[in-house]
Amino acid sequence: MSQIRLIKDRLLYFYSLLAEGKVIYKEEEAKHFNCSTRSILRDIEDIRAFLHDQSEKTGYVQDLVYDRRVKGYRLQPAIRQVLSNEEVFAVLKILLESRAFTKQELNPILDKLIECCVPKENKRMVSDLIANEKYHYVEPRHKTNYLGPMWQLSTAVREHKLVRIEYRRAGDDQVVQRLLKPVGIMFSEFYFYLIGFIDKKQSQGLRFEVENDPFPTIYRMDRISSFEILPEHFHVPYQDRFEEGEFRKRVQFMYGGKLQKIKFWFHGDSVEAVLDRLPTAQIIEQGEKGYLISAEVFGKGVDMWLRSQGDWVERVD
Image (cartoon, rainbow, N blue to C red; front, top):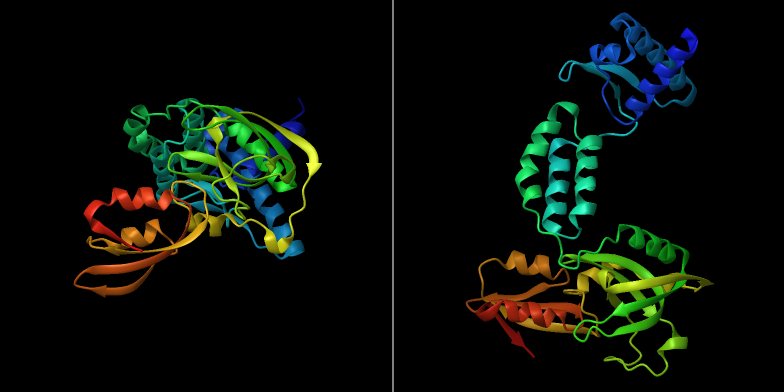
């Protein structure tokens, strides 16, 4: 391989590292490419000159600087910033606590986050901080890997394509077939869910708890035994589009049903926990009896939560 080609390959390699928010360490790269540190410094100066020329052309100012804190060269500002130690640690802890994935799916996600997002000098520390929780991680009992299927169904949501699913119902484990207009994918309480409207062509003859329900039905992803994305599209008027954020505010434990307003007294100490659990909740009265709270919710999932609070909650009908 010619000397010019070797230099070009080095420059492209260094630029790709910098574009990912990573740091260039001249001694390590000199060993990697079996060259002198002086050659690496020349490459760095070439990249710096290129960035200066690009800044004059585009007006986007970017520089390659030596960071004394990490003793290496990095872009300022970086094209793609790495997460801070605090941010990536928080994400890792949330993933572990969610218990949403099997070990087979979760471990590569954790490893990639640490490898791609944590500065080199802190990777060992972050790995050590989650090592015990990672080792004792209890995966969901369904042991279903659904990252791939979930991504496929998300494309059906985005492209407004009908989906035919075979679904194992809770309780009797009976497998039923549904033709759906998928409108969203959500996560709650350990599980991912497919949100969709049953197509009118199939809804005839089916019995529903809420007749002519204007709200979508909810299907736990691990209970979908098979699915087929059909070529047929469905139309969603903009004013009728499904808004996952608004739906999430009003649904508890992903139990569907009619929209209702509830009112209850809360006698506990931490009313903030109630307001966080029910995002639509409002305190309408406060006194010796506690807090009188009203909220707008979907379905019966809220009944499960209210019962779980015991004497702290008193329902007002």
